Image (cartoon, rainbow, N blue to C red; front, side, top):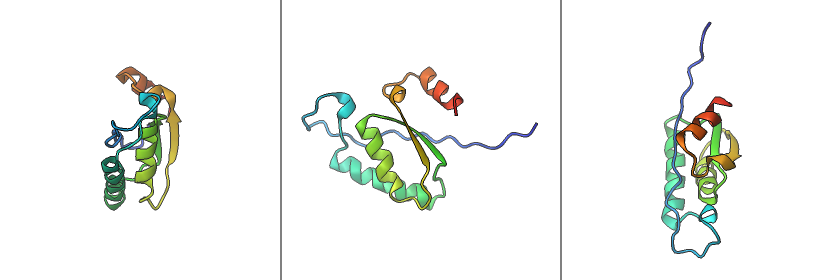
Length: 101
């Protein structure tokens, strides 16, 4: 049986804004610095040929903003799945999400 090579890349959300009035941590947005960083990482990922086919992303606002800003630089857009269970997820939860792909 032959197995296909799979690459797993992990990306943490960019710098979040702590000085913004929010209702919950889940709704914390990116800071200006985080917005710039997310765009820079998107350019780097495209330039290095590392654009993913599939993204599993927490549904927290700062995580969504990070991947959406990064993806603006990508010629080919990946499938993005926003998963509530990835917010503050333990390693076992992340592994379960990966195994379900």
